[in-house]
Amino acid sequence: MTAKIRTPAQIMLSVWWAIFLREALDRLFEARAAWLWLLIEPIIYISLHAFGLETFRIHQVGGIAINMWIIAGFIGFLLWRRTWVQVLHGIDSNRAFFAYRQVKPFDVAVVRALLELFLMVPISIVIIAIAMGTGHAITPEALNPVWLPADPLLIIASLLGLWLFGLGFGMITSAAMRFVPELDHIFKLIYLPLYYVSGALLPISLFVPEPYQYLFLVNPVVHGLELIREGFLPTYHTLAGVSLGFLYASALGSILIGLAMYKRFATKLVMR
Image (cartoon, rainbow, N blue to C red):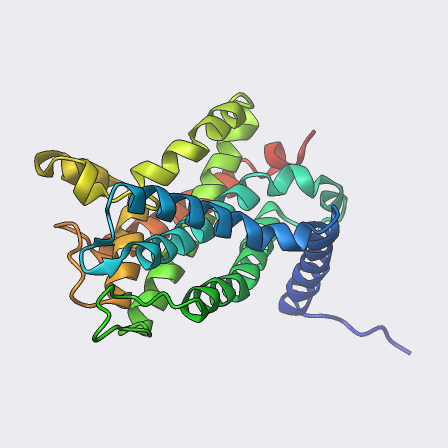
């Protein structure tokens, strides 16, 4: 009886499934109530910043109620940041898998990114449901409130672009960190500032003078977050120059550069 020969695609899917199961168990059960913290973290950030901005009598931004404005941006930012961080540390966390010749660094990067997308979808739904269930509408007008996003396709396209950019940026930085390990300390230092320079928690349009706002548009994440908010409310006043094309060009460009680096330094990446 001859052994069944598997195709390369079947081998790849088997590898992805094995890594996915391992990563999912680690993310959800590595510590007590680890799965709950995935939901609590964004709720805490959103609540604190919404309370802080309302204290300064900022009740809406561009027509969107401040709490929903933060929720819309923070969900997109969290998807990008978590995807980037998971891909960034994917090689070191799965080094034992590279003893099998079928497993490549790219497999780990893709699976970790897919797992983050898989986790963020229900988290986002729960956060938005909680906000709406507690009486928070997209628009602050009491007489004619808007409860549901007007353009879900734009929101999905923007979230997908941010996710792809997180994957590509994570691949580039993970390869770079193999040559300069000290970069890890720098990345940890910029996690918090990134929340603000990306416009996730503080409105760039309110806190940055108009002549200098264009400098923030170099960051593709800003484009994604602004477009998500536009998807919630089409009349939202986005920053001038925001473009879905720029977000996807940055995402695909970073993925191509990441793939080239993974291919060029394949041996270096898996060595201890």
